[in-house]
Amino acid sequence: MMVVDDRLLEGKMTEIEQARAWSPRVISKFETLIRSGDDQALYRVNPLAFARDRAIAEPEAIDLFLHAARCGLFDMSWDVLCPQSGMVLDSFGALRTLQTHYVCGLCDVSGDTNLDDFIEVSFSISPHLRRLPFHEPQTLSVEDFHWKLHFSNAGRLPGQDVRFLDVLRGFVRGMTFLPPGTTTMLCADLDPGSLSGVNVQTQAAFAVPVSGDPVLAPTLLKISYDGKRFLPALPAVPPGPVVIEVANTGPGRGALLLINWPPELVALTTKPTLDFDPYVSGGALLAQQTFRQLFRSERVDEKEGLGIRQITFLFTDLKGSTAMYERLGDLNAYALVREHFALLNAAVHQHSGAVVKTIGDAVMAVFSRPSDAISAALHIFEEIDRFNSGSVRPGIILKMGAHCGPSIAVTLNDNLDYFGQTVNVAARVQSLAEAGQVCISEALYSAPGVSDLLAGRDVIAFEAPLRGVEGDATVYRITRG
Image (cartoon, rainbow, N blue to C red; front, side, top):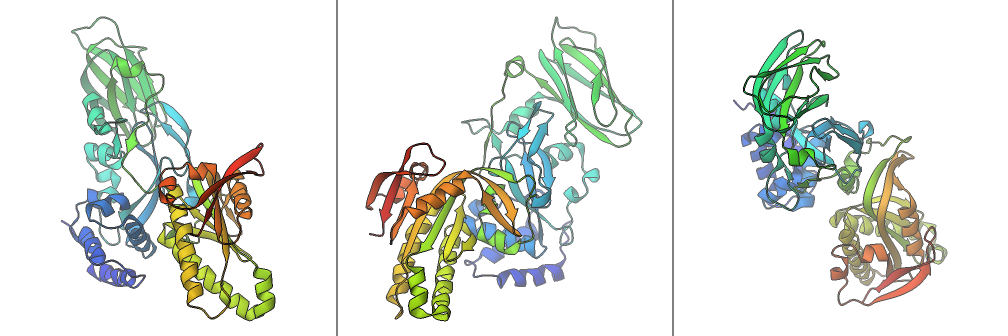
């Protein structure tokens, strides 16, 4: 039975409604999800799927869930996914606690992932608003504990529409809980290949080959489990019936998922990376203006930093700002600069980016998609023209530059910031722009969707030295026309 705290919901929904202007029916669709969605629909919600299923713009859906998390209707989590199985390997409630190193016992792989690769940001209904079985994992059935709590169903075989979980279920030979101080027995029929077992909660795992001549009489395979590792008593088992006895000598309840991998998968030295349905990655969220505004306390461990595989930086700068201050006086010039900052903030936000910081009269903005940075830059030119045409004061003249590549997210001076060569190159590219121009790097010009946005515009390629880049690099100059 679905029980919703109506008083809490009504108060928080009013708060969300007043946070910003929402498109028609967005709030009612959101409230319908809370009141009528089943338990699974309210656990680890993907805002992009919510947007797709309800014909809502993706940026608005992300904003909606961020506001809902800020006011306590939903809990936000940073989930580390196994790239080869879609298992949720770990889940963190705060950015500062996020660990990007992963271990998957099912796939027998480990490694480090970037914020924009396999870190999914999801949202679950708060237990204060509506209690879900997933809030109390110890009450779940063994099936729901494995498939709904510890796996994402968003992973597909590479280049196919086949869900990996549908394939995996065909290899499953059993799943069970392992109460402490007990011996649990499972019976299965094994085909040649490998028998592996994993505790999806801790990633403790084992694997034994299934080889040799098939047998008719059951093989007894004893396995000890101490809460940290599984130790099988046999080095291999033959194909055919098997009785598996697992003795849990550890202090807590364990879990066991048994998989009979076929020979062709066992032979793979590297398992393929799955294709995933689109989701909000950690890297994309850090480039969202709403996240940076609502969750200013979120921090990255200063000692480590978090890697991002690709991010786009846009730098803007006022042309002739020193002369403007001398001509208008400090107060009037500063007022004009503030208006220009507000214009830039709005344009960047509209194109799914975020302003990281201002540096004097300059702005550093960040975008998770390269095409969004270009769209924002072209929009900024339009807004500057509109601003200047409606003002009796001297016009604002901007020059901009952008570049994309890998970076490190860090916390500097209590602000989520970025560090690395990509930032340095973006700043250098901006310095090559003249008044009313935006310069972009070869890497950005070649990124998906960028050349299409620039079709029909005056784009001039030239060679220029870029700090940290050997020799001259190709830079593209785009004028406002």
